[in-house]
Image (cartoon, rainbow, N blue to C red; front, side):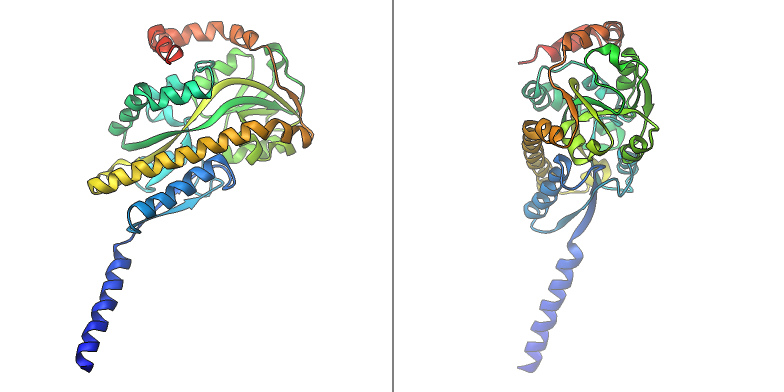
Length: 323
């Protein structure tokens, strides 16, 4: 009897060890705070992966650029030194050039239009462009529409932007467009931005309201203008090799978890957009909430002509007119 109990006990213990050993831990990172639209995206994703794989996969979450800025995280995923990342599309065109088109200014009418494009055949086909670059793109999410902030003056027209030194993402389309406004562009990784604004290295930056709020830019910026000049997608990416090692069922679990992360992310963006302006005004920012966007569009006419040559007018119109 004692021998039988011993055998059973050892079997159970070995079973627990085997279960523990079978759990694979992966890492995912963002450049913003946990209490943000990106934080809720990766927290939801991590919870869903663990649930959908019965605990066989655990995703550790890292915030505030703890594993590096967006570009560094994307490079790490491509190299396989990090399994997963959630990033804006800022640095993505440096790795997957086909995504450049999504950053063309005033391409999307509103969030509903942008989400329909990304969730539809255009966006889904673009996800396949990541495969040959060492990534598996799991799902599109979002940052929202980007707006301008600065510490120097209220921006009511494109002329007010001339000569401002603005931090931009490391994105060639953004840089070309902002130079068209007369901005002195300063590409910089996101974790460096708050200090650069605080020290006056740059006068301003541009980001969606959820980022402006979570990064506490109101502490170092006086003026906000709701230009909505660029829609900023975000994306869940995974190392291609790590994804290919998954079983068919687990591959679907990761994709479905990313879709759930996207739902939570978009809901938080909507919430931040709804309350953001009032919150930032209450914190002392002056807000131009209804600038004449037609003037900003007109100021970019020469740049947009170049974008039409680069991407093809028909391709841009296909996105603009998508319903």
